[in-house]
Length: 214
Image (cartoon, helix red, strand yellow):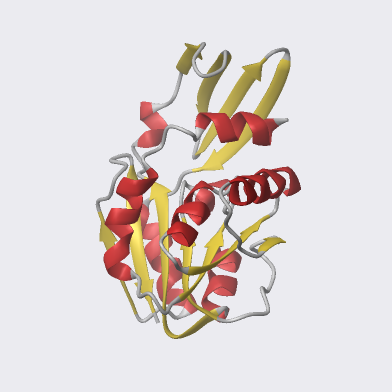
C-alpha cells in the first residue's frame, strides 16, 4: 500500500532538473546502479537518456511499480530485490542513491562499505542526505492535502530521528529517518576508503549532495 502512496507523492519531483544537475558526473559508457530506486522515477530518467542502469530496492511492491513504469514507456532495465547492507556481487562505474535513501538506515557504514566494494576502480558514489537542521525544521510538521490524493502527514523529532506518520484512506504508515551531522558521513567515507569526496548544494536545498570517488 505505501509504495502506491509513495509513487503518487514523488510524481511531482522535477527529475529532469535533477538529471541536469547530475549529468556532468556521468559518462555515457558508465554502468550505473540506482541504489534504492523506489518506484523507478529516476531510473526511468537514466534509461531515457540511454544510460546502462540497474535498479535495486528492498521493497518488492516498489519494484513492481518501477517495472510497470518502465514497461508503459517501452523501456527496459534490470530490477533486483536487494538489501544494501549485503554484498551486491557485481561491479559498476557509478552508484547513485538519491531521495534520502541513506537516511533510512540507522547506521550507514555497512551500506557505504558494500557500495564501495561494488564500484570499479575510479568509480564514484553519488548520494544525498538531509542537512542536520532538518531535524528542527520538521519537528511538529503537519500537512493535510487532497491533491493528488488526500493524506494527513505528521512528523515529530526524537533526538536524531524523524518519525513520519502518513494516513491515507484509513491506512497508516509509520516511517523513521535517521538524521546525522555531515561529519558523520565524511568520517565513514574516509574510514571505508573513498579517496576523495565533495559536498555540494543541489536541487533540494534541504540536502547535502555528496560525490565520493575511489
